[in-house]
Length: 437
Image 1: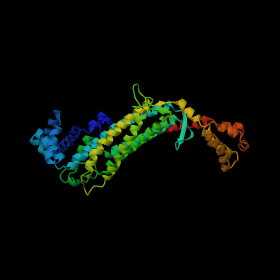
Image 2: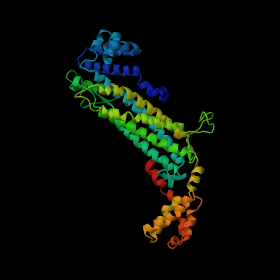
Image 3: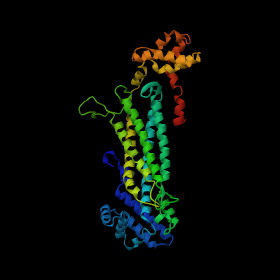
Image 4: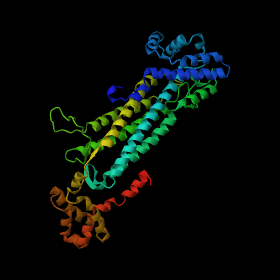
């Protein structure tokens, strides 16, 4: 992943040294379990842990140099460790196969990545909840197809986003549990040369669960679900980012990204304040989603295993998690500092001469005995005059002057249907559903 869209904690998780440290822990724990069962000498496990206790630096370049000859990354690592530890290291990897190390390591990395992402989601949810309550009763126009529909509140827009990201958090928690799986089962997963209790021991030490059936590799449906979940979260990021981008358009300008002192919007036009952060988030979401399809295609491996999945995961593991971590943090900043303009929201609400209240008049006419078809015709013919005047005419005044309308509704009854607060009477109910209380 390019540094521009990466944060240190998540990036460090995918560094080669971090990977090799996890590899060592897997090998050392397995050796310890074997020693406890008398399969290998206790001195073998002790030699490994004694060396580890010195806090050794992992020489990535030296391991890479060995791999250049062996053409096998796990063998290169084992060879290098043996050079450091000495003769006792010959008992490492007893009864194991490379996938035991690689797959269990990936499970550890994805589990730790999920923990970082869950923390990111908590921060985002906190920011969204605060802004939702801040603007709980701030009226704004709801839009369908990009066209004025009926009034909502800006707080409801935020509450909707909160509910969506709360669902995403639950999805990621489930995906984390699914991916936190350990496989130490040997060639083709039969435990022929290593006891299942060794797998259980390693799993416990690493905070994982033993894979019930690992056909030498951990089944890739787990990984497919994990990356699909990241893709769904990315789509939710894009949805909220797109909302901000639309609200920031000059013709709308109901909300906009914070524009810091000294910030420049355009190299050519000094007046520009562009939604660059949310546009960036839209692009980053596409990159995270791009990992989902390859992860699903990795599910179908040949027989007990092949390595067609390996190169894919070397890309998508770091790239998807690092990008999503960055995107969640960026979105949290956008929400936290979002500039909201209630006056402009009210101006836009009033812009089309009361058209947003048309449904209430339609329903009132039907309740007064007018057929739905006739009621729709009466309201629409007046609404179209307002529409064609670009809001210069008033729907309320036109309806009060329409004899067919006033034959069913009094002027006072018509006026009552133009009450903005009517549309907001269940905001408390919706908030209680989303936030509790």
